[in-house]
Length: 75
Image (cartoon, rainbow, N blue to C red; front, side, top):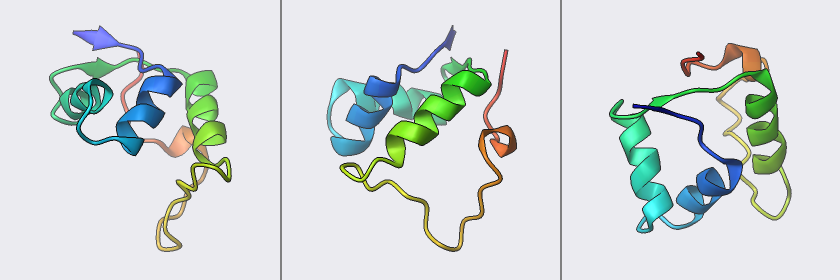
């Protein structure tokens, strides 16, 4: 199955590891669901997750060259 992960579902999964959104994210991590995305979606993920209220900034040891450097699959 291939799906687009809505940004709200991603944020909810990261905030609550026991809810339904987290179950969906786990299926993506286990490759039971193939994540479909494009640069616009990756930019939205990045923009939302970097908002101060979420504080999901990557650790200093993780270098990001932007959404193009992602290891996710696109379709």
